[in-house]
Length: 179
Image (cartoon, rainbow, N blue to C red):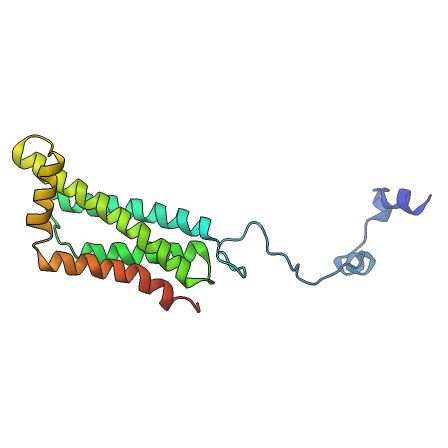
């Protein structure tokens, strides 16, 4: 038999008697780690930030966190604006975990934009819900603007919480740039 035909012989006579004998007879390969990262990595660890993954993880977390905030606020059981800081931290962490270690500036901008989009949608939803509950109809744009300016922006703790959430979403990316 030639060498290649012998390699295809699967008779009982060619099976090694022990693992040690099999390891001695096994072909020796290159045992170095591959230089290319695995396409199935769990967290981005490359030399450049994976902004698409960062955006997607930030988007999913902002949707879940925003909906949770909306439900808490409209249920009437937990109506504090300080949830905005938790939203900022959650979005910042999600973008950091999704995008990887490099480029904290791009991650911070992405987290801030996702936070602001989520914040504006949640505040609109809460205001619309409260207006509809109070007056029985959906607010027009002018009525929504009046309600937002008179009741939302007039509350100093709410504004501080919103700004704190924005700062938290940005700061998380800079604090975690080395980890």
